[in-house]
Image (cartoon, rainbow, N blue to C red; front, side):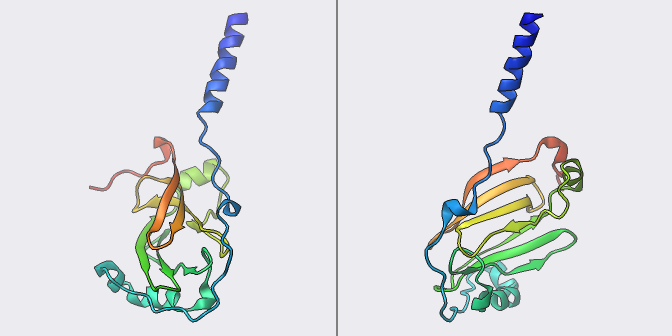
Length: 172
């Protein structure tokens, strides 16, 4: 009996040690200043950026929309049911990163975790952290933490995929 209890305890410790690390917090990546000047026009350099030029320009040229990392805007638009596309626009340089697409976390995961209303994106004006909750390009569902790097764009710093039970079937 003592061996069984020890084995169960060891199994529990092993399971706990395999838990993903907690997600990063916005305060870990604070910015010092919030840009207040006139926003530069977005520089649309790729075919995808030019395809969504109206959404990127309308969300990228308005400094009232400064919502991310001190001097970035994050224009967002729909791409179907429970799907969002977005870009990240530098209000100082006009540099555009993206567009990116993310669909929501599968409903079965939301039901099992009592998490209705989980946003696709989370960010704040005073932090370089951008969290993505969902399925980038409708696959690899999970939780992604990025930071913005000046002149380089988004850099993935942590990823936690949902278990295979909650992944969306591949569309080939």
